[in-house]
Length: 435
Ligand SMILES: *Cc1c(COP(=O)(O)O)cnc(C)c1O
Ligand SMILES: [Zn+2]
Image (cartoon, rainbow, N blue to C red):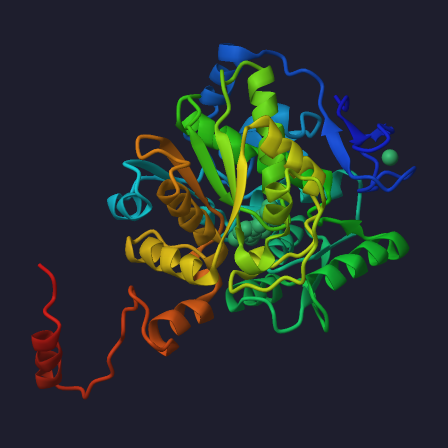
């Protein structure tokens, strides 16, 4: 069954699901995937997805039962046989409640959807399992991407699982240590480009056209199909009841676009009765989408991006048009938070035992800002998305607790001591250990 098709956003030209282009050949527009109607809808489709939640037998990563992506395969890539799937049990990420984070944000009913629990430590695995499965289906021999770090780590891992060569372009000196070391260690050919992310993206596009390498960048339509499953996974955990708000970090706007599409489908197929309102949070130094939102999307802005949250340091987001549609359809909003607010939110999330990377904390900082300004009422059910694992960016984390002057509110100083009991006693006298 190959009835899925790739359709151009701009000119509506259609091509086969197994066509290797990731942009429209007629007009270079972005492609989206059109799937045939699933076999059932409403409660029967919910039940189908629920039966697949049964504990998997056998090793992980061998089929759809133990993946939080392939469990929803009818809505992701219905044509792929089990034998083609390149999977390692991605998705199925926890939905957490932590009193301390909820209090800091100012709502009782705050839930944390933690995508840092994916195999390579970010939600990018959800898109990559689908894109690399597609690469295998079209018999690609090599795959490439430009990345701020997490995409390259995910690409390197999944390409390695599939036995494909991987080419990664990252801005030299601008990638967090955890992400860069993963990419190299998983075995990707890693090119450190003397330029920014936008230069890397241009180079990746050009090399894919001229060298015949399959492009697994965020414009790859199959990646967004995989990212839709953050929504399906979440809704299933909430027994198909939408929260009032879903707050997420926004950089290249892939998730915003994917969430819009997923919520549209979930409503159309009768999986949910209403959608949550989306709140997209950008870093103040990289907030072109927030600037457009303030003008009711009258103009598309681009900026020279700067922020401590490298995963959302993007000045010209690729999925702009689709993200606009997602915000309009969900009565959503877009806001920005400062780097200081991001780091403070991160310290609260980390200190609660949950932990996340800097970009992820933008959602928690944004939720707090929306509660303070009265847009989110304290009685609302809010889900904040954490996009990446805390070990992705150890340098920023250590700098916050060690090197910043004056020391920030939530800094936790470590203390060097002589190897004696007396030294420990001295420390405990000054800073008693909490009972
Ligand atoms: C890629 C990434 C983002 C940005 O998501 P978009 O879909 O590009 O808006 C945010 N956080 C982390 C950790 C990421 O890796
Ligand atoms: Zn087109």
